[in-house]
Length: 112
Image (cartoon, rainbow, N blue to C red; front, side, top):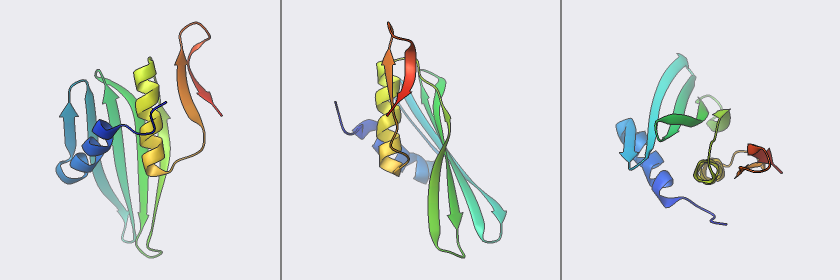
């Protein structure tokens, strides 16, 4: 199994600078909102073939000088979706659970 997805990781870095990145059948969008003078939220959305497959919320606490990432939405319909989602979750250091797609055994699912 591949341990990374160079295209998606590059797209995330590009979207952080430009707000979005589109390559082939993948698209990444990113934006920030200031909710409080010391807390800022960022949102990453990953699309595959136009379908939202992953949303990650970034919380920056400027008082504590910390940044935390959490998945807020996950959806997949293919092995490609699962591989992309796993690579992005690894990139952000989110959780230990993985996703897989097995069309015969229930489709898209979370595994440990």
